[in-house]
Length: 237
Image: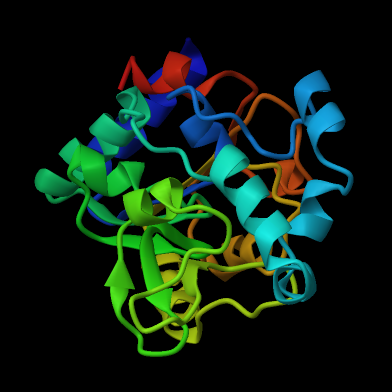
């Protein structure tokens, strides 16, 4: 309780909060973490997820890639949860400077957040690799095999695959936001996926809050740690 009061105090005093979130933010909306290997997954796919969503695999076996992508990575029809909603409210109140997210589901924007830096892209943006035309997530979902544009080009999701670099502009904006934050809340991420995890090293303040069910390699740097679900904490904020 004492830790929660401390967090409430910090939130009240802050004007440049930055929230840095991972898969744990979305799992509470019911979106499964594609890394969690369920029995069904093991029976259906012959390769580990990390292999399938690599650039090499996408190039070599696009049909297989899109089969996995549609089943495991196209979370349509989900709604924002309490964490998304509280962050959107803080931004409206002028307290939150930015959301930096590793998620690709667009739920922060759906909740009303405007300044969202998506490190790994978004399933909601899809572009023809030939003519550059924009296509919706529904277009990908409803197409068969390899999704193709009217011009014949492959429609590729604007999602960062393994072996692909992160968008430099997004990285720079995230670094700047984190560097200038007066309160940094890192939540729902194991902080083991780089380069994203390394971004928290740019924080210069003394109010680093970690909220994650399990411990992370950065726990020793945190000023406040909660090993609890995000919903539990944010429903009280």
